Image (cartoon, rainbow, N blue to C red; front, top):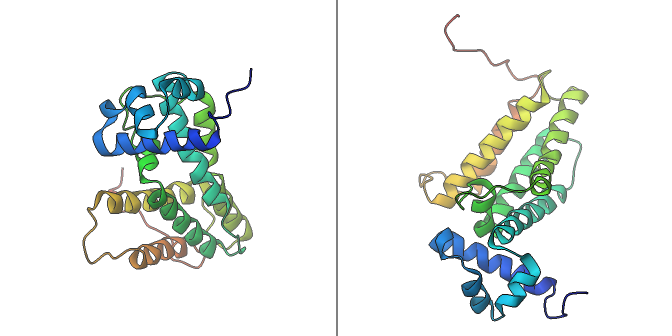
Length: 208
């Protein structure tokens, strides 16, 4: 049978946002289906109908976070210039994190002990990196970027934006690093560093 009309998409999203806020503010122990239902002005029956168990609810939070995240990353307008596109993607990454901070922690910090996303959720999470991977591949293939493995550009760029955004959200960035201005400069410096004309990086590791 179809779900009752009151158990609709709007209620599902309301419950997800409220659940994420509870976990983000008070920790995972604060999340109970009864409390969630009361806070959202609905019944526990509605919560069970929409999500099932508490682990299913957390998995739905994880999926919703990456769904919104992926929509923002795929929504950027590609220019064909790999440097510009990397910067735009990094800005979209930060915008997504700041728009849904209560989901960002669940997506990337495993803030709920014991939670493991199901196979479909993991597939969705992995797919959100495809725009970054494509920009890196296109930059190398076109000759704009140096002849390096695109995976190196992908992981390095992801590490930079994730690190800076995580520090900003934790409130641990130094005051002289003002976002978004300094953030965009860092993105541009990283992207420009992969240009073919840039000096090749040299290893500082001692000879083996």
